Image 1 (cartoon, one colour):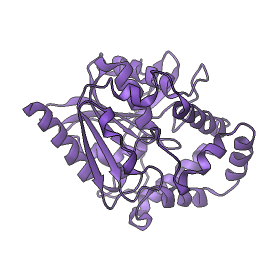
Image 2 (tube, rainbow, N blue to C red):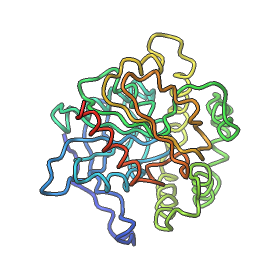
Image 3 (cartoon, one colour):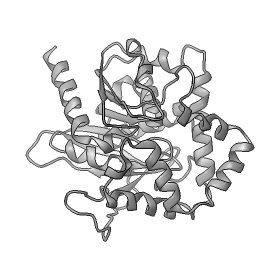
Image 4 (tube, rainbow, N blue to C red):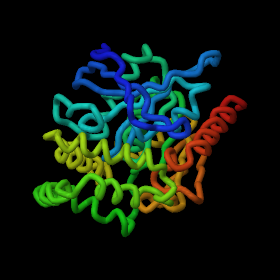
Amino acid sequence: MITGAAHGDAGTGFTADVPPPWPREDIELSNGIMSLRHAAHVEGFVAEPAMFVHGLGGSSANWTDLMAHLREGLDSIAPDLPGFGWSPPPRDGDYSPRRTATTLAELVTERFDGRPVHLFGNSMGGAIAVQLAARYPDVVRSLTLVSPALPKRGLRRTSVHLPVIATPGLGATLMKRYLTLDAATRAKATIDLCFANPDALPAARRQEAIDELRRRDALPYVADAFLQSLRGLMATYLDVSQDRPWKLAERITCPTLLVYGRADKLVDPIHAHTKAFPDVRVLVLPHAGHVAQIEQPALVAEAWRRLLSTAAAR
């Protein structure tokens, strides 16, 4: 059930080349209200439903440009995950990838009458997308994972801090200290970590990130949402059951595209584990980091179109 009218982002000063985030609306689900952004398809084209899932610490706005590139074929929504963006925490307090996947399956059913979606996920959103595609195959038509946060051997030097932050007690202390830094400093740190070439990010996008951090600083649950989501993600790395992420990947039969950035400081393409997915293609972009959908949206869009055309030809 839609609980609020669409909310625009007027007055942001974005240019035609750098559009503002898509209009926002809220939807009531069983585990709480979820905010989402909607990029309606271009009139005159036959469009299929799509859903875009952001990563840890991100928001629905992370998909603005890729959604724009795909408007001729997709009617797209990008939810703010529980506790992130404009979405409040989940009612049951469960931030695990599995629980979030269940909420997103409900969102697909509510929003698109159960029609299967083309599913996109970045980083933690990729891990959640694997849970969704494996556990609810009837609601996913294709799967595109951009630098998915899936288990791998060892840690990269630039991601070794994540298990430390996830440590109970210590993590809360570190987060409290981190949040005392001004929003511009925190935004720069994230951009430097996630982008291959941080200087190439348009000034409007950089300001958007700063403004979002400042808005969220007033919310009492920001640190807890980040820590609980990170702990839920880390728990999947330690899972040895038949429901561990790579076993779930083996159940996914829809066409799958894995997108990696060669300059990614968080996820190494060498850990793609391509054999886990029954029907998979891999794209490694030489000039992209952890968020290729922001850095190279046109290339990601074209790779997705090729995925669909290849699947249709078969």
